[in-house]
Length: 106
Image (cartoon, rainbow, N blue to C red; front, side):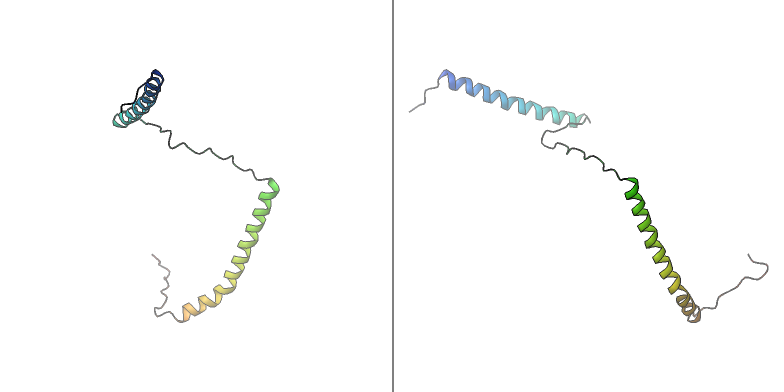
């Protein structure tokens, strides 16, 4: 049994097809922009908002600098402490003699 189409149903169908038509036209425009080398922004991939950059107070920065200096000083002290013994062992166990340049040099 066929369904009777009323004016209200027909208007709703026209409106729905109009929305679909506008979506299809937007997609076609994006594809044409891709062909011509233009940029096409899509609504499906919005860019996330940029976060504000956090500011560091002068005291906070000074604390960080002091901590870094302390760490590097400790590292240098440890390296100087370990370096002489390593250098002596390396020189003693070296299979190749160390060549020294004479007064003429290079």
